[in-house]
Length: 207
Image (cartoon, rainbow, N blue to C red):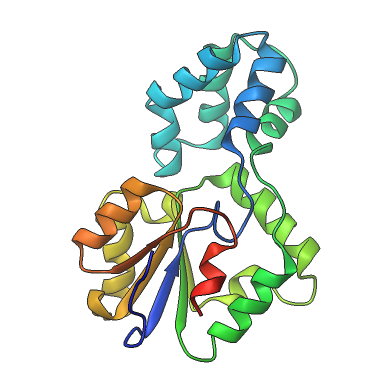
């Protein structure tokens, strides 16, 4: 996907599938294993159940989210196994991505806009510390925006608008990188330049 980046001044990154390896099906497989429900049933539940989106907007807390999962999965086991299954989708962050972010920060303001939640946030910050023990995850960016903190999730326009408003940014001067086609389409409608990341390291070839 060829894009013109000569006049951009900032970049908004998605997190999963862009900065951190992501395998959403791994969580569905883990849920299926601990609940003895078929994988496809678990996956359909995740697509249809509204509480996942509410959790990402910060509208429900961790215990409420776990309670919904227990009910849907008919799971009565340990809380730790439930969290581990939910976090199974989160993979490593390659060192080369942090190195590229350091390079880009010399020329652009860098932001994160991620649809995520409290349980995942704790895990990915630990993953980041493993790869980058001497520099905190937030220090690679001008600001990190997480859906559960701003009360909006992509592809809802407010997920990007809060960044534009907070930093008085022109949409036309920004590049948004995401692995989700719906998010790319929504960001483009706001006037952002966009790059649809097909494989986790593809975005690094742009610069």
